Amino acid sequence: MPVYTAPVQDMQFLLHDVLDIGSTGIPGYDELDRDTTSAILEEAAKLAENVLAPLNPVGDSEGCRLENGVVRTPTGFKAAFDQVRDGGWTALDCDPEYGGQGLPYLVSTAVGEMFSSANMAFNMYQGLTHGAYNAIHAHGSPEQKAMYLPKMVSCKWGGTMNLTEPQCGTDLGLIRTKAVPAEDGSYRITGQKIWISAGEHDMVENIIHLVLARLPDAPAGVKGISLFIVPKFLVNEDGSLGARNQLSCGGLESKMGIHGNATCVMNYDGATGFLIGEPHKGMRAMFTMMNEARLGVGLQGMAQGAVAYQNALGFARERQQGRAVTRTASPDQPADTIMVHPDVRRNLMDQKALTEGARAFVYWGAMLIDRAHRNEDAQALGLISLLTPVIKGFLTDKGFDTCVLAQQTLGGSGFTREWGLEQFVRDARITMIYEGTNGVQSLDLVGRKLAQDGGKHVMGFFDLVKTFIAENKGKDEAFDAQFLEPLKAASKDLQAAGMFFMQSGIKDPNEALSGSYDFMHLFGHVCLGLMWSRMALAATSGLEAGGDKAFLNAKLATGRYYMARQLPATALHLARIQSGAAPVMALDEAAF
Image 1 (tube, rainbow, N blue to C red):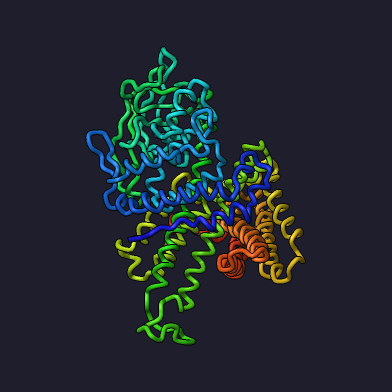
Image 2: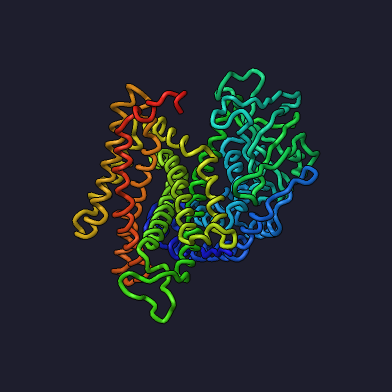
């Protein structure tokens, strides 16, 4: 059976030594000293390790079941959800006006990593609710906020997002769900939505669905989409629950993974809905939820890789197989552990370097969100907008790769259910697909985000990297050679790719779009190279201050591995990008 241990020491290292949250000037960060964050993370770790992780294989084996219109969640889920809710974990970064604790998003991100590593399918129930909360908080009327948000913050009520329909996923301009105005100012919603995570379940009193639909006079395409609140149970003026709305779960999807989460077909049969914001402006409101979801999915990918690595490492330390080629490591044993073999070490080092680099990247992204919102910093908002498709696409690709590497570490045992690695692989796979496939993320990055505000934000990223290198160059010869020079070379590859797009993509958009996936990965590697360089500086300072030598030396060795063995992939991605569209588009459609 797989196990999970929350990486609290690494989280504390990132928060206080790398990001130095106490010196950022972000409102609320000054209250997050080491003792405070330690208390929060340690309590969350207990819940993740002792309650949620043991339920992960239960949810996978039992799945959800639909009985008389009600979805029954796996054994133990409801009791665990009550613990999460009663402990206030669903309200960490929510607005105190509606019962939230008002903590920074960064704190919620660290806790969310633990819960996702421990039980990704379970954590999605509160994650979807949080996204719906954000959309209503940003775009709802004062009356809507007062009616729905307090009970969504506490997770007494759940929340969902309803976009996809049988005939359309990415191209939401094709949706057919209708919203007809009623005399009382509400709307009647009719249509079918599919793949709705947490669309129906037995852990909350009510579920607040956010549904995209078209008004009768709506223009064609995405400019004619509106967003509606459609509660499972209508809510009376005093906040009590009223009649059951005209909506139902028409079935549960049979899926590759995340069996513990209810993925529903939702039928709306003239259900009562309430417009959020302005008519035909629903995409703007929904993207408030989608952008948070994409960052959360990047976190999920990293979190699944992290728990898979932990279990692979535990196996490798105990599994005896063969002998070391240079010397016998355990002469009193019939064989050495597989940790002595260079290929196993390579496998584990890839997992460790990707996981720890990705964790730093996600936390930095969360800090940018806090800076953007709490300081009203437009530069931070532009930068995180640029990085969102990279966090979602690159980190979920690498998170899945890490799970596969971890499974490979176990050999044949990794293919069996007993050890749990195959579940991590199956669960991680969806992160590359939902909330916009990773191919769509790369198209968004190259087709929209690079040119946003005249390219201001990508140039700002280049300046950030250049400034970091200039400020730290010459302090330490080894650091220059092992970290700064590889980072500089990778950044030049990224700039060269951007220049190719500018020169060739204007004439033929396929020249840029054919290289978009490679560009997303190139960008991701540069970001992780920056993160590892920052972590190396922090680790060096920690050693000089008498910190934990084993932890900090391991951090430096892992960083050197990433810079030497992973970061050079930027040259490969650049070569693919510069090959242009010809190799990709040359084959006639009929010849496939």
